[in-house]
Image (cartoon, rainbow, N blue to C red; front, side, top):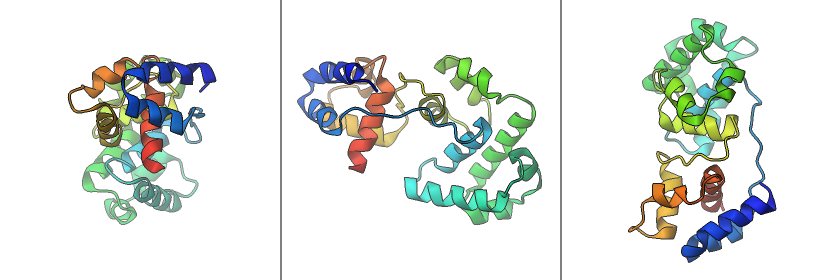
Length: 197
């Protein structure tokens, strides 16, 4: 994020001194879109991390990658047993979801360039047609895979609660976040980074 856009966030936070201090303390967020995995794998990784700590999500994904080896995702998911996925740490609901992602990939519904061209509402509508992929997962894909700078993940409890604590309970976090458009993703990243710190 450029110094100019960070200054935009600081200016927008002027009404909320606690939030302003956190933005100043964390400083600019320098993050590019992360596309080290193809989109279907990134979706599976996001599903693996739903409602878990970062450390737990990494452990599950590491086990998944270990048993997958070099096989393609579609090939792997067509042959791996539910018990193998349970042994990685996936719940039954998450197993259903990663299998649905594999089917969507096989049907050509997760072509990277097509998804990257979509506006976030359209992308969310498309991705949430896949069983087990909800708005939170679509938001994470939008922020971290697509690099969309203007997503506020209202369903993310850490981002929401952290912002609420900084602006007070009388303010709606969605309305507060809206004042940070077109840099709401950076606001969310600041909330996460402040908690990590």
